[in-house]
Length: 248
Ligand code: GLP
Image 1 (cartoon, rainbow, N blue to C red):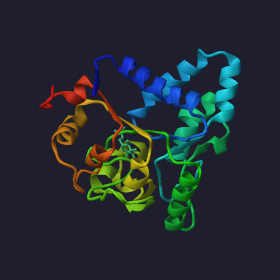
Image 2 (cartoon, rainbow, N blue to C red):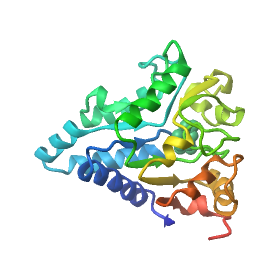
Image 3 (cartoon, rainbow, N blue to C red):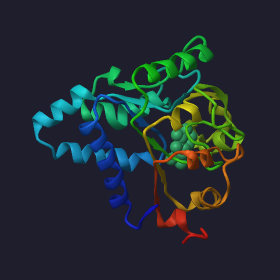
């Protein structure tokens, strides 16, 4: 576990790992996440890339391949609240990437179950994630794998918990009822197949769930706890998230 006091140092450290993945193993996809935790990380990534020489930047743009974890069911790709739009604003446009370089499940697919299956297969055909970036939900979810969730749950359409709809209400005018009821998410199965995983937990609000994650044995009630079974997980946290943890 790496603990940071300075938020910009944390964001730079994670951004450097993402960049290193794109530069050293471009043939394997990078697994990306959305959420507030990721905003400073993507901003730091853009700054790192801006400081690179143009030929290297061009190579990076040309070779970019990332798969996001999830998106809400029912939102059009240009709906500003979709994760597709978030990725467009936070990475694709600032870096000048082609739309096809950033893969996400198609949120407004006519048949979300079928789309989830297709997306999982697309990721598998691309070789699976080399590095998977993850945030942690307040209820212990990763992606949108809500508790209870087994370690072999695959890419699928899920029903969001009330706590997740409340946590994400800010993007929907503050109204949890306006948050879509369903999402398509990569499962723990695809997440655990990544060669490396980087879990980032920041902010005092995450202290309780981080504490549980550090102490509890793996179980369906805490989906992120299945990460313990993976041999290569980096945990990066800030001091606020660690407050109250028994390992502090
Ligand atoms: C969201 C996403 C996750 C994200 C998590 C934490 O709902 N589906 O991928 O990591 O919840 O979000 P935040 O970083 O905003 O706390």
